[in-house]
Length: 141
Image (cartoon, rainbow, N blue to C red; front, side):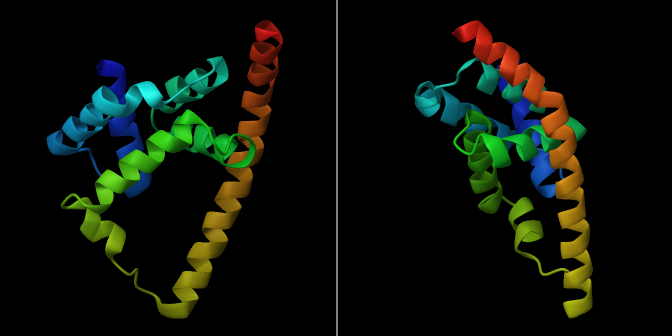
């Protein structure tokens, strides 16, 4: 349970910048109780989830790596579950649905900043996680 709560808290902070509400944590735990057995994870998927549950930079690194090299990973599925819960839970849905200020110039600047951050995070994630993936893959074979 503690691992799942850590995941939910880390993913909520990563996706919307807010703390996870007790209701959101309850629903995340409920999802895992009812459908969690369908999430098949190999050793590297489990590693990515454990690393991401540390929060902060680790969620971004793990997500960047999975986004590029593990699109169907358990981590991506868990992030989607949390995002779906956030989209229908107050007050997070208000933040997710709001339109940022700044008009077209603000949108372009946000896009440039987000793109640069993604490129840097992805490069760092590949450097950090690729050796672990190679090592775990070689151990499984």
